[in-house]
Image (tube, rainbow, N blue to C red):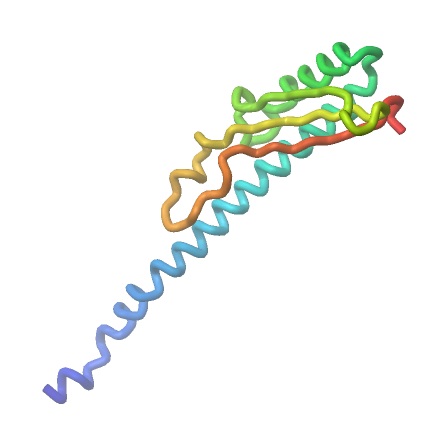
Length: 137
C-alpha cells in the first residue's frame, strides 16, 4: 500500500483533468465576449455613420430614408452582423429640436456565441444610438 501512495505516474493526468474545465471556461469566455464586443462595435459604427449620412436630408422623412439605406447598404461589411437582424429608427431628438438621433437595434439571438458552453451569454439585443446636429455641426 505504501508503494501505491508513493507512485506519481498519473499526477499530470489528474492535474490536467482538474484544470481543463477552468481553462475551457477562460478560452470560451474570451471568444464569447470578444465576439460580443465586436458586434456591439459594429452596431455602434453603423449608427454613427448612418447619423452622419442622414445630415444630407432636407426633411425628417428624407433623413430617415438616408439612415435606413446606409445601414442596409453597409451592414454586410461587418462579418459578425447578419443584415436581416438589424432595424433602424431615425427621428428628431425629443429633448433638443436641433439634434437628429439614429438608433440601430440588432437581434443577436442566432449568433454562434449563444451556443458555446461554459460561459453565461450576454444580452441578445444590442441597441446603439448616435446623435448629430442639423447641419452637421
